Image (cartoon, rainbow, N blue to C red):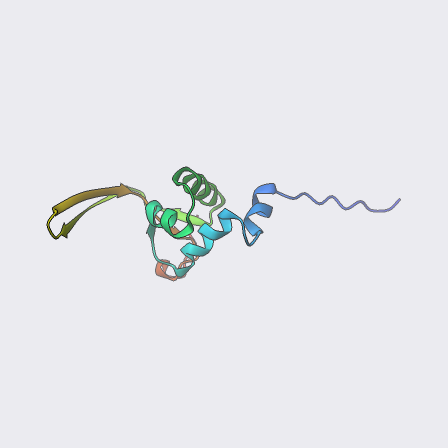
Length: 109
């Protein structure tokens, strides 16, 4: 009797490891170690908002990214000539890779 090789592949991890997959693009964008909002990730990766949210949720469950505990809120005022001031409020969580140097070399899960 020979030994049988039982190899189990997790489809989520296989999808992440593909270099051209959307999940890989989001993970690589967070590679600079800076915390980012979902809106920034969406604009940089040219993916839809819901798609980015689902990818971040998946990476968060895998322990590959971390999310801020509370939502942050900031205001932005842009002054345009002959138009006036426009005021925008952004609210959301910050996302960062779990291996970021900003975390002081500690691994959080």
